[in-house]
Length: 211
Image (cartoon, rainbow, N blue to C red; front, side, top):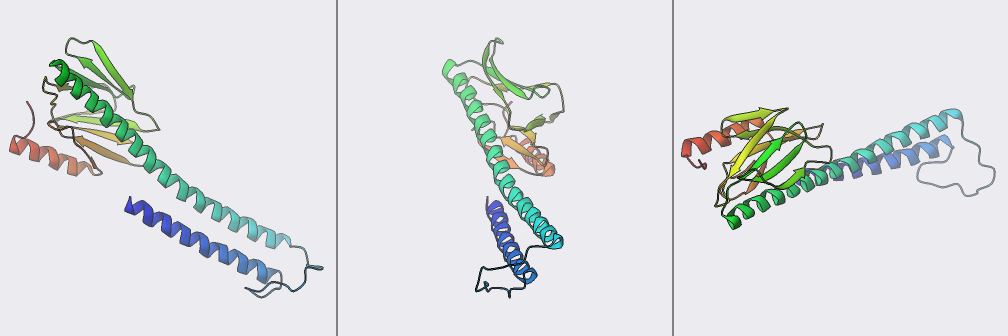
C-alpha cells in the first residue's frame, strides 16, 4: 500500500502543476499577466482556434492522469477483495474437515476459474468463483504445477491440514502468487515466480509440508 500512496501523491502533484500551467497559458494567451486578473470584465476578446486547441489538449492530459490515479487503487482493492474471499472459503473448508473429522478436498478448475470444496466421498460442500477480472493462471501443490487448464486437487485431512500450495493469479496487467501454508492456512502474497520456487524448495528441504 505505501507504493500506492506514493503513486497517488505524485499524481496529485502532477495535477496541481499542470493546473497552474493551464492557468498561466490562458492568462498569457488572453494578454493578461500570469497571476493577475483583469480589472474589468468588459469587452474581453474571444479565444482563437489555437487557444482552444491548447485548452483541449491540456484538459485531455489532466483527464488521463485522473483516470490513472483512480484505476490503480481500484485494482488494488479488487485484488484484496478476491484474496480475502478465497481465504474465507479456504478456512471454512478446513473448519468443516475438523468439525466432521472427515477428509475434504479442494478442486481447482482452471478452465472455469472456480474452486470446489467436496467431502471425501465426493459430496459437494461449497464453491467459489474467482471474479473481478482475475484469472487463476496456475496452481502448484508440492512439485506439481498445473497451468492454464484442467483440474488439480488439494486434500485436507481430518485435522483440517493440507499440503502447502500456491495459486498464481492474473488480472491482465500483472500476475502474482498466493502461497497458503498447509498447517495453519496462513496466506502470503508473492510477486515473483522464483520466490515461490525458493519457498517450495525450503519446505521440501526441511520436511515441513504435510504428507
